[in-house]
Length: 124
Image 1 (cartoon, rainbow, N blue to C red):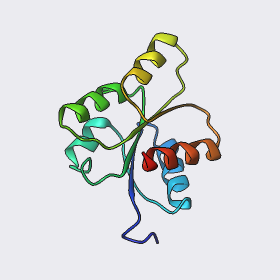
Image 2: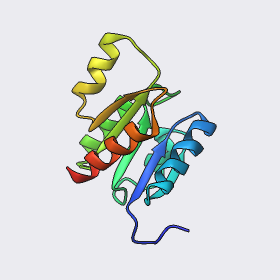
Image 3: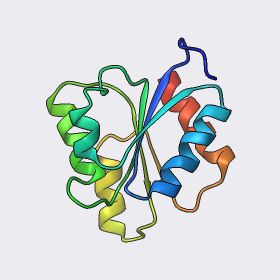
Image 4: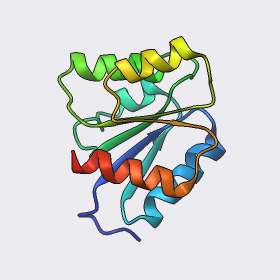
């Protein structure tokens, strides 16, 4: 069980198995984790203000990770956002980077790369 004082990392991905795997990785690094199947579900949870970092898939049905980051900016939520994607289109990746994401990881990614990105985002 993770201590209540461990920073909360919110994981948003429509792929349930990947969402669970990332949450497990987050917990193994000593953080608390919660998962959401969509950006809309995450926003409805009112968890944005309590999260130390948000990890979101870039492409999901409904609101995308880029749309989520824009909505968080509109709500003046300054929580760092890590975006993950299997997509390779240059314009989409450029848009993700321009959104102000703390990190952009391409799937499949190594656990070490994810943890380094997470630690960097939390240190910022």
